[in-house]
Length: 452
Image (tube, rainbow, N blue to C red):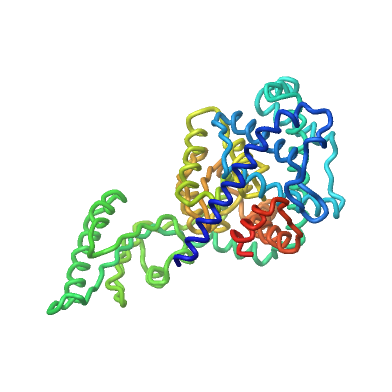
């Protein structure tokens, strides 16, 4: 344990020293690189990726683009070890993906790039020339850097769809199962566990717990509590634990609950004794959906994961800052997702997940989506190795017998699996790739951080 901490701290110290050197080197050469007519004379390779290399000038370009995007989103850009680490790692991943695009012959014409720039300009109520003038303040090459990066992102989007189309399959049976689930009732459940603790000698803990549970059942039967009142009344005791499940299908609830509610109507209460204590389960609402239609949600997200130089708490704080910026200014959710979101399968599309059903989403996220109003942004949600914020763009109810609905549900299932498949594909690319960091110090550090 102590040896691991020592190695970890040693790695971080070496890493930050290397990045400090790189930052100084970049800052010293940025002006020279931008102004020089012969870039090669001041350029050198930073990373070797298979048969390609990432040059210092390319790193400088990406750093400048990050600065532009950040400031256009009304944020303050401050170069740091964290941001440089993220830029370099993203450039490595994109280089690997663009190599695949070249192998498949996937390319985007300059005409299509110009059309996309026109769309971006119009969405900001600007002409192309006005939009381009924004970049003039950042140097004569700034707009060209933006254009080249936009083209790369459009190519990568085509690659993701090409790769996932062959890796993700959805059968008609799966879609029909989703439609069946959509016609099952949803529940609001008040769940209270009264603990049965045998630690105190001379006390029959089961009798005590049973007495407490009887009193709670009587209260629940006679008073229609609000959620706030329930949490205030039962949420601050060492004797029991309360969870309020809202708008949940049977399959999304713990077994002790799902086995107990099938015969309960609204207001009904069941008490189940197990090793933990007395489980009080009340159905506060039971809703039979309209069997002629199904609700579809158009959802966006911004995903930020912890990494070796940014822990979970720092990641959450950074995401909260982004959320506050969206809510307090004219900057759009889409812009911030393109700049900050680390889900490469949809960040270029502004974090758009398309039209989805709640059951297409993980339970922790679907519960949040179900309780959001249109255009409302969630608080950060802890999921896997990081945090994400969710925005509901629109909600629609579609007829069950509509063939278009079948296609939408099929696409929503595919969309829910794309991010997983892209991550798997990216990991496979990394595992097969030859990646060499030219500076030996960072090569050692990356190997230790990645467990190599």
